[in-house]
Length: 499
Ligand code: HEM
Image (cartoon, rainbow, N blue to C red; front, side, top):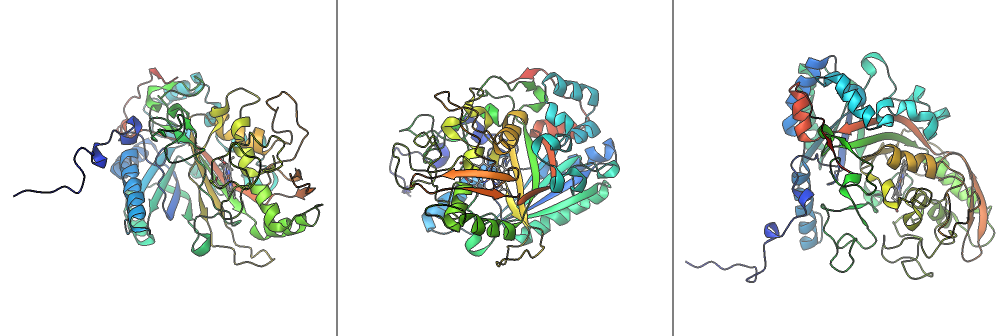
């Protein structure tokens, strides 16, 4: 009997195509390089009563923790099927990820003093201090003060040791998995400090955050994980405008952009995780945008002002003209770098996406433009705002999650020196210093923001904060190897790795 192949002779099967080395990692946890991308995502913040029970819990969940390889295999299959059928395929699964705070590492490590010393020797000060201790520098004051946080600033058995993310394509699958995890928690007398239920919004708001803007569009490309475009070296294949960044920016033990991410071996294949529970006042934002638009000279309305504050319209269309042109709205959603808009006349300097990723202007102050990128993995929590002018009092917002190998150079630079700085950018490429133009109006401090557009429309918005921090943690997402060692109460190897 002869068999015929649907594939022409000489064309390799997908599974035979060369894979970038990190793509097949079974040691790096999922969600760092390969996103979980699930509609139902619970966050459990847990406290271990003692080392034995912490290790017992870790041992019991070890086999549930997802790897990069399996996470990306699923994502790839999903995308291929979507492309083939023109709709979301009926492929469903559950993913888990676990991270440990500094206190959590101290609780379960066999030699906590050595672990502390490893972190100190590598100057990982923000991780050692924890998110609550960094609050004043990051603008977590007043309504965002740690005293009011739901997690991340507690004492005694409210100190968070582990963050468990359980992510599923359906609520039924999530609940089923949670039942198993409940049993493991109970068996080890783990204290659940708080739980957040991340849920993607539904209907026309699917894929959008609560203010109504499409989220999850622009992410860094990662060398050795994402394939490179054959036409544009240094750019992710099929993702115009997405630069490939050295993998050591997101995973310890790999080459980084600036040679500044050395780590002890037990951190190799791991990453720092930032978790921030950001409450959004949607009615307040809507009213401020409507009111703010009336204060402009020229052509301004709430839709355009909202886009100026975010940098994209609600459907994700960027204000930025594509590379090489100074007119029109960018047709490609991410193929722009602001080099044709130094004065912020298309995408104002206060716009959230420009503040948090200034592209060609990034690193003007320190000369390291690619050292401040964030791998964002956020998801909304809370029910959708029903509309109208009045606050309905419901707690809703964004579970902001990001990964990277330097809390100081990545999340903290972006939040502290870019979003919360009135004088950002620190300098233009020609050396001139721009006038203060205000704070990031999505996640920055309250205050004024100057906007002057190419068509002559100009004005100042003076807005309070509509995003408040209600919980935050810095954690470390270890490799599967290190999780195993921690669970077994074994010593952690600490020979230096990385660049
Ligand atoms: C409730 C809070 C937040 C909201 C509503 C929000 C909303 C958005 C939206 C709508 C986008 C554009 C879509 C995209 O490119 O993915 C975006 C992009 C982004 N946000 Fe946020 N965000 C929030 C918090 C934060 C925080 C706390 C940070 C970091 C300090 C941050 C950093 C970024 C970055 C780096 C981008 C990508 C910019 C680019 O590459 O063009 N966001 N955000």
